[in-house]
Length: 77
Ligand SMILES: [Zn+2]
Image (cartoon, rainbow, N blue to C red; front, side, top):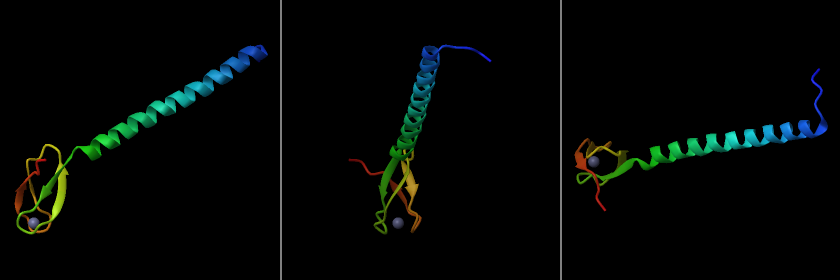
């Protein structure tokens, strides 16, 4: 068995814990960023035929209304 001193064991134990916490921090930060970007990358549309408000992907300039199928342009604020 490997014989290491108590101070080395403590140092390795703390370093492993810190690396685990840091790795989880980076992973969840990356995941939340991608979830937020996906949610944020949507554009609002207002149907001028039936009045429904709906959303679609960001790059869509025109999207069909889910209720009546009318093609509407995106809302500009
Ligand atoms: Zn409509």
